[in-house]
Image (cartoon, rainbow over all chains, first blue to last red; front, side, top):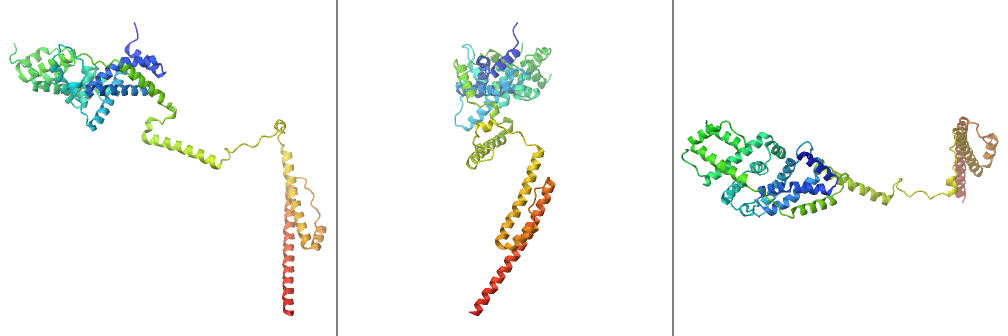
Length: 188
Length: 231
């Protein structure tokens, strides 16, 4: 039986801190999908997501020695990603460029998926406040539990729960408004 | 069950909990159109989110990240040469000011020279370097100091004698008879006494010399006035 996730992460971090290129590469491969996926969801722009992902990894390796090895690594990395996305969005607001999230998202779509529903959910998430959006994506896309989201966002668990519940309610309300839900009038 | 309670249970179901009150949820949804609509929206959303395939990064992203990370690590200075991040902008400013002050000090030292930065003394001959004298003893140092004080007193006395011989040979003779040459004192205490006596002699001789000078000057001045009146 091999080492568990946190032990493997700690070993890779120790290697990266010693300058071991294989450990650095292993860390990049291990987390780049999560980082990129979160960037795509929050930025809704694939090219921006690629740029921000690179910046996130620069920051990760610059501050790797500040990671508390008694805690899981992924929430720490997700926290850095959220911060970078936040900064990027703030800068993008000042620029005239607009993100066309409906056509430029990189979410993989299988042929049999109802595209309209996907787009409605994406649009609904995009309309959320950034805190709600982040909690929603970290929970439903990244699969982080409440505790780890709280660590990543440096907020109490109760706050994260509140944000996520409100986010869900707003998304569901939009789906109802847009007629995406067929309500059965009579329950058998 | 009220709508608020229904929504709470719906959230718990979205969290993945298995509800033991599931029958109550179904019962409320059957009776409340809004809550039934909400439940269907939640089910659709959850199905969609579960079926979503993960977002795949471009194939060359790993390579691009590694290139940037490697370049960044090469470009960055070692940590000891950087200002601590916790100091913030003010701390970094202080570091840069200190660095600038160091450079300025080095330039000034180069222009004007500092005692500890001056060029070292020329090298001595190798024989002298090899030949090292033992450190002087305390007794020898005291004896040298005594002789130095005594010679200072002698020198002062001699200089006054020369001065007086130029100004008044008679006084010089008298003085030479009345004040015999000082003998080197046997100890430092005697040397001090000798120096005091020597200086006293110098002072009295100087006083006499000045009195003589003023007397001669006054007489010469009176003679000139007399001559001018005669003419």
